Length: 293
Image 1: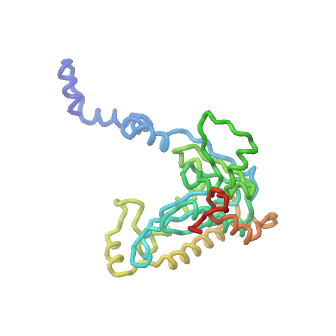
Image 2 (image 1 turned 135 degrees about the vertical axis):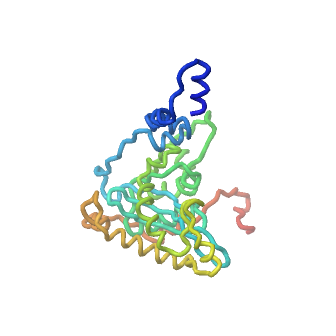
Image 3 (image 1 turned 90 degrees about the horizontal axis):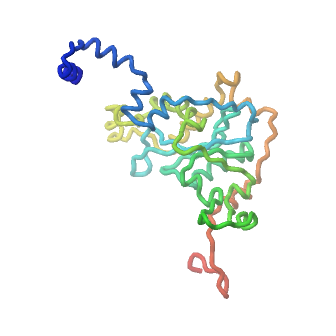
């Protein structure tokens, strides 16, 4: 408003009142305001038109979507107080969380463990849809080997260089567009499955400092927090409750979508062997040398 007064004074024009300026500011399109004040990234997330995917062409078990989430709850892990990370696989056709793992830090190992649980219960998927994080693009998971742009390898050579877990299982992996969390259907599932439930737990801290309740400090001092094992039990119960609840988009329960669906489960021991860490070794005249032996 002060700038408007100065501008009108320079041009010898009558100055508008504050109400006129406020009405003009409120009339500005929201996308233009977001772009000017918060930048292109915020505009893409909040204002850019989106296309909703139709998952009806997929059958349960054909595609799993994976991601990590930092839970909004502090738990006790020995002498430490930490927020656990939840690694999950979500089936968009049945709206089911097919596999999950809880840990203090997410990595390719938590991805593999949660995927193991998913495959042993709901079967081997045809495809995985994940983001571009380095743990999802690791050689351990999908055998991704980066080479120089000028190097051209035969398909046979590329296959030999890609002994990742997913390649051995015959699972294709597809990466979402970078910096577009809304492109993965597991993100909104996180948003409507956990935040309200987390508020009912001791140690709830909110997603940022603005939400953090005053009682949290007292809960930490008094030791009223859940242990990691106790939180896992509560989390498992929450997921069971979700799977047994009517879903508006399905017209039924998520778990019921698996009735009469043929499930191809791998042999557990075979999966365990596939999930073992592996590393390349140099072959010497007397054999290989590994772990000091």
